[in-house]
Amino acid sequence: MRFRCSRCGEHHEGLPDVAFDAPFYFYTVPEAERERRCTLTSDFCSIDNKDYFIRGCLEIPIIEHRELFAWGVWMSVSDVNFNRYKDVFDDRFQSHVGPFVGWLSNELPAYAETLTLKVRAHLRDEDVRPAFELEPTEHPLALDQRNGISFEKLQQVYEATFHDTSQTARGTR
Ligand SMILES: [Zn+2]
Image (cartoon, rainbow, N blue to C red; front, top):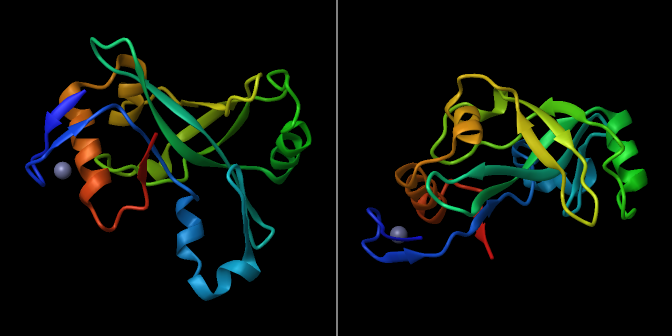
């Protein structure tokens, strides 16, 4: 994918995934308190030993494109499922565990109100992060996961990711 960016006028190339290093709620904890109140790794986050999150892949087909676009995002899970995932995290086979149900826990650029979306997480084998499947609602993100994202919409996602300074998302790869 190559497009001329409407924000900076440059050409952006490639199909980077867009990922978040932490769930939205992590950033709502004042920075000075994070070390005391939060634990955060590349795949697990807990806040106040009360709220638990795991990271997964929200994969979106691109219309008329063979590749998938992937969001690296977080979802809330129960403490029970958090620990079940931790227990099998280093195992080669883990798809027999779950699925887990929770809420999407990042605000995705170029979409509104994504924190209210229900997610089902399917653990996967061979060291691949869990697949996040959105509840099949009429929310634009859920529609895009089912029907594919248009090139134009993906361009908006990249422009917001690369240029909105309020964004915690970043392009990867
Ligand atoms: Zn740009």
